[in-house]
Length: 259
Image (cartoon, rainbow, N blue to C red):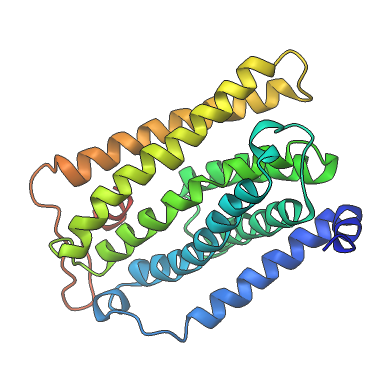
C-alpha cells in the first residue's frame, strides 16, 4: 500500500476517473439483480432504484472504511489538516469517483432539474475532495466527512422501501428509528465537528473561506433534510401512499420519493 500512495498522489485525477468507471461497472452489474414489480412498472422509480443501489454500495464501503481509518489511526480525528495514510487517501479517491459518477448519471439520464439539490451537494463534496487530493491537505477531514455515509445506508434503505411501496412494513418502521439515530449521530454530529474545527482554525487554514462557505451551505441543507425527514416519517400530513396502476403514476411521485 505504501508503494501505491506515490502513484495515486502523482495522478489524483486519473485515480478519480478510474474509480468513477469502476462504480459505473458496478451500476451495470447491479442491473442483473431482481427488482420489485412495483418499481419496474414506473420509469422514475426504476431509475431511482438503480441509482440508489449504487449509492448503497458506496455508503456501505466508504462508511465502514472511514470508521476503520479512525479506529486504526486515531490521529485522523485530531489532525484534519495534514495527517493521512495511504488507505485514507485511497478512500477519498474512491469516494470522489463515486460522486462524479453519480452526478453524471443524474445529468445524463435527464433528471438534473428534479435532482438539483443532489447536484449541489455533489458539487460541494467533489470540490472539497478534489482540493484535498491535489494539495494533500485535509485528507483526514474528508475521511471524517465520510462518517455521514453510515447514515446514508439507512437513508437509502428507507427510500428503497418507499420505492417498493412497503411503508407499512415492520422493516420500514424499525428503519425509521435507526435512521433517525444515525442521522443525528453520524450526519449532524459529523457536520457539527467539522464546523467546529473550521471555525476554531479558520485564521490559518488554507482556503479557509471556501471551506467555511461550503460547510455552512451543507449545514443548511442537512437541517432542511432533517426537518423533511421528521415531518415525513413521524408527522405525516394525510395519506402519502402511492400506488402504481397500469404502469402510470401521479404528478407527486418525485416529491413523494424525495421526502
